[in-house]
Structure formats: structure tokens, C-alpha cells
Image (cartoon, rainbow, N blue to C red; front, side):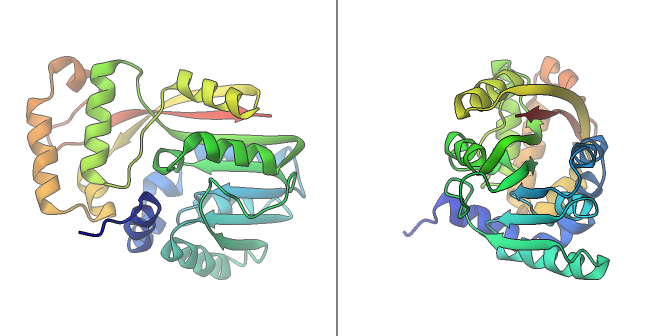
Length: 253
């Protein structure tokens, strides 16, 4: 049996779901997206790299205020969606490029701002990706990373990663806030701001957006039925399977 690499799995999972992500309210709006927009408003005419851009919500929002955005992703389908939306909205300063985050095809100190939203938990090698993000950032530049985080308690962590993996086999791992700080410091960043939030995930649309197979949806519902009370309380598990997760935006220089 020939198995796909993790990079191939990520590209396959997201290459066929681009339309669903374009329409996703979770991805198309939110206080975290507003916060990323606010970051570039402080640095007008800058060049921005959007790592793991997905269907382009960050790239499209930021392109209104900057000189150029490079939308970077593994999935051709996602980049095609970015191109279509950029053309529709007249965002002619968005450049799309495909590749892995662990070996960025850009020279040192290329970008004023590097951002990534809801992507890092899919990266094959987070440490390598962050090192390369640091490499391509100009001296004095800013980086912002937004993602779902694990609560940092073993039982809660196990439940979150299990739910994520059943829904999407390209899932890598959600980090805790402390793990994020350590990973960024190791990569050479200095964290200047951390904002934490809670995000409700509507279960029916969450699995539909990824095209989760019925057998995995059944497994998810089975896990919901066996979730211990303290985990169910923490994730605010609802009768239809909807639940609430921790998120963060971490800004670094």
C-alpha cells in the first residue's frame, strides 16, 4: 500500500474543499481577523506573507491596506479560490504561490509582515516553519499567528486532538499558549502581545466543510457520548455536537 506524505494529505484535504472555506463564517469573520487587519494598518504600504492562506480571507482583508500580499499554501484548489476572489474584489496586489512552509522560496528579509491564521496546526514541522518565517521577515518586522489552542491539560488535550483528527486526518497538533511562546522564542521571535478568545464550532457545518466521511462523523458522535463531564463542561459540548474551543493571536517581532 502506497501512503501519501503529510504534505500530500494536507494538499488533498484542502484542495477539494476550497468553496466551503470561502463561504465559512468561522473563517470569513471574527475578532482575530479584525486584529490582523489592525496590525497592517499600523504599517501601511508593507509587503505581507500569508502562510497557509487557505481560501484567502486574511490575504483579501489585508490587501486593501498594503503594497502586496503573497498568499502561500500547499493546496492548488485553495490558491485557485484566492485568485478568483481577488479578481472579483479587484485585489490586484495579491500574488499566489504554492509550497510547504518549512522551506519558503523567498530570500532572507523579504517581508515586512508575516501572518498565519488557522494553519499552523496542519504544519508538518512547526519548528522549521517558524524558523523560516523568521528568516524571511525583515529586521523590525512583525509576525502574527492565530490558531486554535489546546487548554494545556492532558485529558482536555487528548480529547481535542482526537476530535480534530477524526474530522480531518491532515491535522497535526494544536499547541498550548505556553508551547506557542516557547516555539516562537526558539525560532528567534520576541512575543509582544497575546490575545486569547473562545470560538464556538457548529458541529454540522464543521464536519460538512471538511467533507468528513460518515463513518468518522459517527465516531465523533460516539466520542461525544463518552466524553467525561469535566471535558464536556470545558468544551461546552452541546446536544448536536457543537463545542467551543480556545483560540489565540500571538504577535511577535
